[in-house]
Image (cartoon, rainbow, N blue to C red; front, side, top):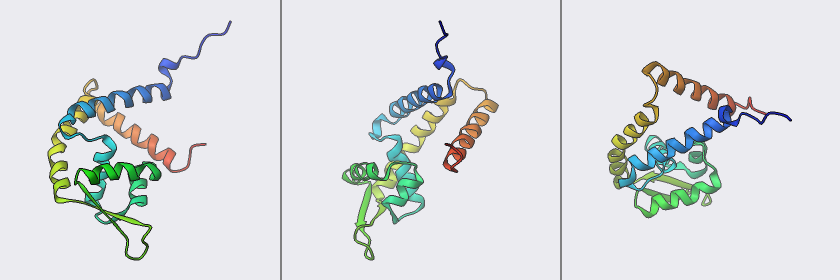
Length: 148
């Protein structure tokens, strides 16, 4: 009889569990804003590059371009994002954060910072930096096409 796979210590399982915890903490800390982590990332990315097209933005925040339209639609319904057709290519949608959206993001920043701190709370300061560096290296390595 073979021993079962030790999934509790498998990187994929641990990453999934960490994601579940990180998402729950984010939602708890930002409950007053009714925003998801992806929406927050989209708003911040758009503040950095106003007028960016929807497909490029989806790539920048590592989110599926097809699904990003509905996420952006929800942000638009809240009055946080303005979407317009590109004058050169009507199929392309260009996006801007509205002044209301910028105010909302400014208000969220403290809550998001609390969430990030809470996620890393069990770790020592040097471990926090190490974990973030390793996660960045892991994600960058796979985005660079080194994965199968």
